[in-house]
Image 1 (cartoon, rainbow, N blue to C red):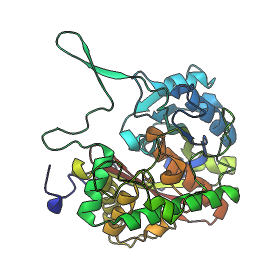
Image 2 (image 1 turned 30 degrees about the vertical axis):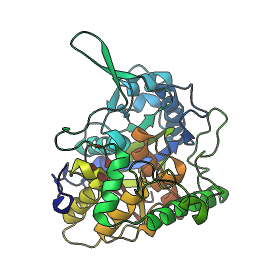
Image 3 (image 1 turned 90 degrees about the horizontal axis):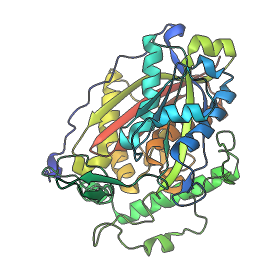
Image 4 (image 1 turned 135 degrees about the horizontal axis):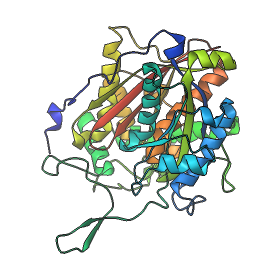
Length: 402
């Protein structure tokens, strides 16, 4: 394991140039939908990933008013699947024409956000006019995976390897403990932040803040994760979940979840023809960092994004950061000099759940819904996520009226 005191990002280079000003090459998200997030083993326990995704694909394309035949490609992130091409399978299951292809993306927890960014980059490059992008995860139905030994027997494993073992490849829970220790994030701060996430999610649901983005399925019409009965005293009773004597508990960690989310990305010119407001893609960056501190990746990708702004101070009015663990959210906020209270205005994954490959797309869907409610032209938004193996991904969008 590397010395935490010398942790530095392995990379912070941009993935491409900024989007062009030409409306025919300016990417904009004009629709965003997601399933209510379910606990693994819950309402979606018998629904495979491609069927979860197909439900959202049909809904988001219908909402955008785009004929499916006009879609250049369907791109979906997925982290725990068994291979194949879940995006193509989902597109066909959704009833899209055979002419619509599909691409499955694996950047683990960042897969859904990477799929959205890739679609935006392709629009900016002039490769196509309309894409559907997002992510899906069915932890409930994910296949068992195994390595084949020399004698032909199978060695089953619970997760893939993300980094060389000699340099450190911790599970996310122990890695969150590494982050808490390295950056001095106390148990009290973690519990308070997690409780805030649940309360915000409950308040948002009560106010109908999720109604426009949700696509009911299997009798579930609301996110299953938020807990009404959590109190500071109850949270303090949870034992350390991953390391004896540690500060990361089940109460300040996200639950395992099933879910899917998708957006429609097209050109600003097409959005104007349709009379649609939307999130204009501005820029995105990806960065690597020490895998032993994998939760910090989003700090480094966001620093790279800030550096590309030529020294201008960030003015993000809405920020969605996937809350895998309260410890990493607080540490990233501290390192960036941001108030963690600015993140996830309606609660985050600590309450709503973390369907791995879908979570980055869920963040974009949340930004779309929040910006749409506010309706302020020029509203600046940011989605960021940390990933297994020590990586971060950050993407900036601006709400634009037609």
